[in-house]
Amino acid sequence: MPPEKPQWAELYREVVTSGACTGCAACVVACPHDVLGYDSDGRYKPFHVEEDGGAEDCTHGVRGCTLCTRACPRFRSWEAEIDSHLFGRERAPEEAYGIARRVVLARATDPDLLAAGQDGGLVSALLAYALEHDVVDAALVSYLEGDGTSWKAVPGVARTRAEVVAAAGSRYTYSANTLAFAEATAAGSERVALVGMGCQASAPGAMAARKAGKVARRFQLTIGLLCSKSFDDAIFPELFEARYGLRREDIVKMNIKGVFQVWTRDGSYHEVPLKEAHAWTREGCAQCPDFAAEHADISTGGIGAFGDWTLTIVRTSRGEELLDAMERDGVVEVRPVEDDPGVVPLLEKLSRVSRRRDPGAVAAAPA
Image (spheres, rainbow, N blue to C red):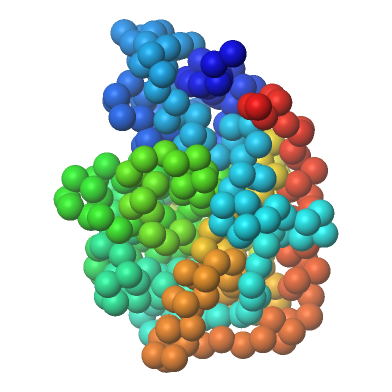
C-alpha cells in the first residue's frame, strides 16, 4: 500500500475540531498555497477557505501536499518526534518540565530592558543581543494594538532594540506570534527568532523534525514562555471591569504571582484571585500539556521567590551558546537556581499539572 499522506482533512478532524488545537498558527505559516486563514477574534483557530476544498478538506492535500500536518506541533506523535529531533532522545517520565542542559536564574543588566521587561527582562535582553550580534535578522513577538489601551495583543516583528522594548511585558491574552513570519520574510529576513508559549515554541521543532521546507530553516532561535494558560479578551470587560472596576484603558501593567496583579495609571495596585479568572480560560489551553515550553532553545518564566529574576531553562546547544556569550559580555547576570530552593519543585509541580491535561494520543501515529 502507498504510504499515508495526512493533510488538512486529517488535521481538521484530529486537531482543529477535537480540542487539541492550541491556535499556534504553524499550519497557516507553513501552507504554501495560501488556503488557510486564521480566526484571531476570540476563536484563535485556523480555517480552510471554501473555494479549495471547503472547511473540511483541501484540494492541494488531495494532490499530495502535507505541509500543514508536518508543521502542527499537536498532530499525532508530536512530542516524541520533536524530542528526538532536538535532543536525540525522548523525554523521560521524570523530566516533567522537559529535557534541559541547565537551569539558572538570570536577568538583564541594561536598566532600560530590566524596567521594560517582565521579571528579570531576560527575553528582551536575549532578543536585543541576538539582533545586534548577527544571530537573527528579526524576531516574531507581540505588541499591544494601537496605543495599547485596548490590551489587544497582536503579532509583530522586532528588528531593533527600540522595537524589542516596545514589545516587552506580558499580556496573558493570546497572540499567535508565528503569524508575523510573513511580514518578517517579506522584508528580507532569512534568520528569524520566535517568542511564544509552549504551543508556539514547539512549532519550529515540529517543522524541522518533519522537514517542513524552507519555513523551518528560517527559524534560528526559539524563546519559550512558561505558561499554564492564557485568557480570552473578554476577561477585561467581564471580570476586571464588571467586578473590580478596572477598565482596560487604565491598566498599565499585569503580572501573575499566585494572583492576577494589576497596576493602573493612577499608581494604584490591585489583585484579582486567579480562581475568578478560570471561566475566561482560552479554549486552546484546555488540553495543552506543556507548561514549560519544552521545545524552545531557552525557556523563561517569572515563577519563584525573586520577582526581579527570570527562571531560565537552557535546552539546546544553540541556547547555551547564546546565554554563555551574553554572560561573558556582561549583558546578563546569572545566579544558581539553588539560590531559590523552592523554584524547581514549583516548576515540576506546575509542569505535572499541565501534563494531566493531555488526553493521550488523538490518533495513532502513522506507520
